[in-house]
Image (cartoon, rainbow, N blue to C red; front, side):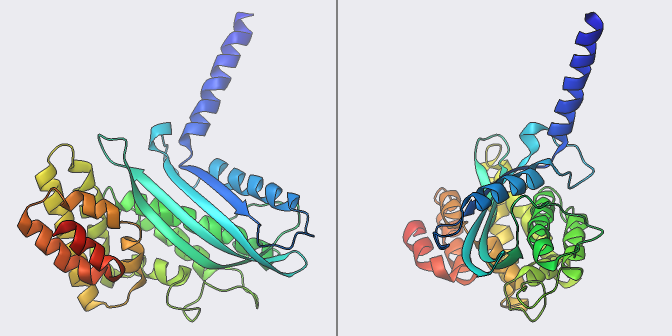
Length: 307
């Protein structure tokens, strides 16, 4: 009897270790309200379950994550239309956050809409990813798992970057491998230099281009030297966050219209306003000046809230 208890205890411990070692705490939702009602919607419920399994059980790194260290992220796959039998066109909303040290606050790390995801799917077919065979045997099926794997690596890379400059480089390189070996087909796009100015290719390129290394310093200054220090030393933290925005302004002046700038600023307006509302008049004035360039869409909001 005691032997069985010991085996059970060891088994539970090993299971807990395996579970806690996974990096992502992910929620995948598949929406199909825009699809013709004659289609059996059960197929999308099955797909949702399989994608959740892929994102939450696959090991993406060799590191061990405790439960409280997992990166919270969500993916909303919105089926836009049926191109042909078993071929779907969709958009994908990707969001990820990291905890701020000493608080319960989750700071946005990724808030991005990928409007160009086309894939094939037949209910119950395997939804798997092999980084050594990104293209798979069917480009249409492989494109879906390649897109999800790409964002998994990008999220992990950005999370690592937020704790130490260039710390996420290995995962950006894994994402680059997916870009370089992405499935090809007449309905597949988003992976190539000529597929537009705001796609998977350009996001990854901006993060591995050595000319843009300052971006990694910006991520570190904003999150680790900034947000993580707000409880310990609010004035120093705010100064570091302002410095990160000034660095980003200098980067933008030298490299206008890069995708990474818009990507970084997306969804941060209220967070930044909350930080600088407690700042000095000089800090507020500087923040308004810098943010008018970095986040044009919200320029009036910054001015109204911080003046």
